[in-house]
Image (tube, one colour):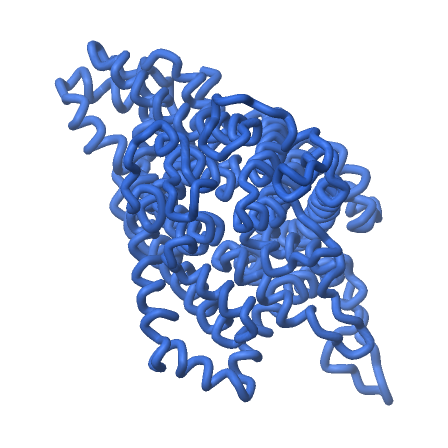
Amino acid sequence: MAIDAKMGGRPLPFPVGRLLTPTFSVTTGALVLIGLLVIVPLAGIATALASAEGPDAISDVFTGRIARNMLWVPLTNTFTIGFVVAASCVLLGGAVAWLVTMTDMPMRRTIGVLAALPFMIPTFAVALSWTVLFGDDRLGSASMGLFAQLGFDMPAWLAWGGVPVTLVLIAHLYSIAYMMIAAALVLVGRDMTAAAEIAGASRAQILRSIVFPVVTPTIIAAGALCFAEAVSSFSAPAILGLPVRFHTLATRAYGAIETGTPERGYVLIAVMIVVAGAFLALSAFLQRRGQAFTTVTGKAGQRGRMTLGGWKWPFALAALALVITTTIVPALALLFSSLSPRTGALFTDPTLHYWFGASDPAIAQGQAGVLRNPQLLHAVWVTLGVGAMTGVAALACGLVIGSAIARTKHGAMAQLLKQLSFLPLLVPGLAIGAAFIGFYGAPIGPLPSLYGTPAILVLAGVAATLPFAVQAVASARAQIAPDLEESARIAGAGPLRILGAITVPLAAGKLIAGFVLVFVKMVRDLDLVILLYTPQLPLLTVLAFRYASDGFAQFAHAIAVIILLVSVGAHLLASGFGRASQPWLHD
């Protein structure tokens, strides 16, 4: 019951008793967390643009002498890459999803498992593997890839620039479309397709009239997500584009901030946010329109599989070639390159020097192997520590925000919390890093600057992974009957008591899977940490990028292999805890 405090015999206009309720406390805590992690840092970018230097920077970027090279050419490159990547990912991912979930294709379980792996491989690792295979001598003999070493004349457009950047992003992102579309195709009941087959409909007619209406909203969402990921990517354009001065918005923003003109970088980052956000908003609008015209309910019925007949093995071999090319080939290219005396000479005189060798002035300017280099070993522990701290902190924030959403249920506050907690999906990792430097990189009253400390890395990581943490908590809470928490609430248990005694123990598997996913994103993400890195806080992804930029390819590839093993291993562990990541593989 609310308690109305009185002053001088008159009731206060606001019932103070509401401030003492657990719901109000949890909701306030959730809003404060979202404000400190998302709203305030992004507002710092707007504040920087409103400063004395901001109008000049905006003018320089949009209409000044440097506008063409600073904004318009990179914007064109970014849009081109985004649209090609989105369309290609939907076509490839959708085709593999259909083959795995709805047909009698051989080896579909193996193909399904491998098709989910490319997104787990760091983008920069795939880009580095491209240089191992297709690099030419534009940057000297050290940049020559395998095919160039074998005597093939590699065209410049295939080795560096927009084409390899686009192909690398397609290879990395099509698994997003595969997972999303496959989950939607599971909703297509066998009773619907069987009825169409009995009525004499062809395979093409079934796809057009039954399957596509059900999955169209998901196709739009998958394409939008792949577009947003592509336009915000920094790793692939930096590794494959910068050597030939091919720029996107991300690389131009990074260059501006690194060269002492951060206001120009903030302008470009604002453009990136607007582009990604507008496209995602458009996709949401199109999804709503698509759902309005859907005539199939999508209820899952008994599922069978379409027969491919004579196309069974050709489709299987094509899908297998795709998933092997995008998973096993990059990993093997990096591994063999880390064992080779020269870049591209993958199978000639293998050596373990770049892994275990002692310092030798005649090799790599005296650099010791990665597992004997104190700086790199320190970077391993820093990276794992930051990843673990971010995972715990993100999950804790997700529990608070998830509890607030659950308590406010379907009200306006619940919708506001959901929208704000998923706002980081619209913001590129590079933009989040820049926002945290702009706001937390300087002292705030009595609080010191966080730049150069683990705290800013963890806070930025929590902000970037907040949507995943909240979704993991929501998925975990969905497994728990509301009656359990309601009974505990009636018995007088507070929010923390309910979390510790009911929510966390009963949903431990889902929560551990959520922690692992956040941990892996921090371990393998270069875009988020490239601006937050300092020599005192070495991170594996940044060191690999620095080594590759400085011409020490074998060291970069060895570090990439370490990150790849951690990422894929942790993702498989998370899938084991989730146990339902690809249920269509078990029917």
